[in-house]
Image (cartoon, rainbow, N blue to C red; front, side, top):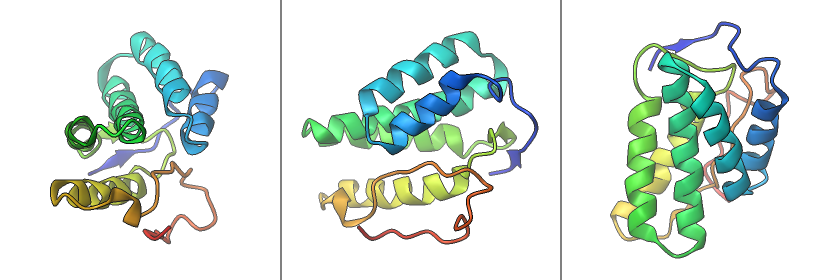
Length: 137
């Protein structure tokens, strides 16, 4: 995946930061709602990035409701979008998010417990520990 790190259309939109905060607080439904709002207002590759993150939030919502099949499908679709070449990264560590989601997806596909690895969290690239990915709980 090649990340394009330019000022994105949501850099001054409080809703974007709120959506990431809701995602990281595991408020999957509210994060989904805000991301979907932004998705409807976006176009081009920004739309693809938002949809990938949105799908991971919905996958997490499915997991909280015991729907492993739905989570598996949406993890796969979200990863497929986020791993596309040339996506804007919105100054987010998309690679780190993908590593966590890929690990959870592999566990789901092997009918194992995805909670053996950490819950997805979205870090800013400027986050001090962004070079370290802890996959344990």
